[in-house]
Length: 123
Image (tube, rainbow, N blue to C red; front, side, top):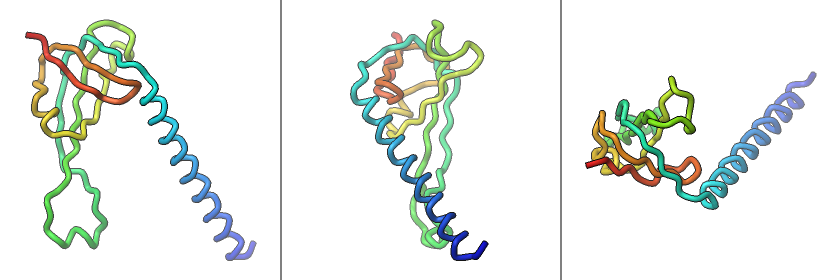
């Protein structure tokens, strides 16, 4: 097989995979928008925040504040969200929402589809 043909085939496959990913994300956002809000009784099992590398290697030479990724692991108190041994992992975009959640606290987790809405701790 000639190299130009192989290159064209590889580019077409990459284009098809990128298009599929784009439409999958678009469909998931549409499903989340059309879903109703559901609340679950949960316990905060763990919290993690760490720098998230969103820069290319050449951009790392410039000193800039790093973007952080905020993950919270919730354990459902009633069955129905995930299996009993596996916690529910939520990735937060907002640092204030992350800081407001304390490890070990119980409360209500509000989701719309797969989208995090809020967490209200019990008093």
